[in-house]
Length: 166
Image 1 (cartoon, rainbow, N blue to C red):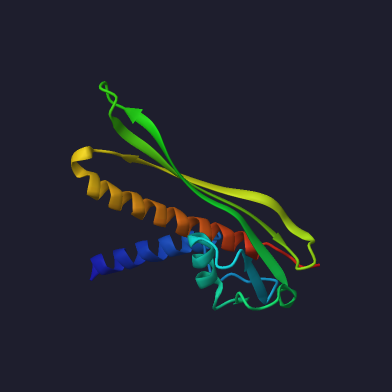
Image 2 (cartoon, one colour; image 1 turned 60 degrees about the vertical axis):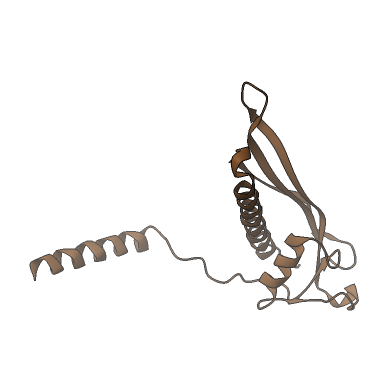
């Protein structure tokens, strides 16, 4: 009985500490707009995942809808994946790569007024390479790119939540 009481006290103390410091779980994003157009149509993988992520909170216009129906237009200017050699062994064989995902975007009104300037999101991850496990490393590379893509979309969603229409 006493052990249970001690555990309960520790749990309540931790909960009180988290509450006192202002910690709270990130809730759903609130956007200042109801309709959004993501350009270009259909766009790359980041644009497609962004459309899926926004769908419940914001109406994302389809390819056939005119831009004038959107309150905000998100232009994805560039989605670029890079693979750079960062390490080789003494015989010149590649041992390590750096994977990069760069997303360049801007947010504007349909009339052309910039709501955010042209901005970049740059994510990178290092991956070792071994030619004896080339297929496994290829799958790992695809997974790392997918994780970076999801992170880029989350960053875009947070940036979209900061936009105010005045």
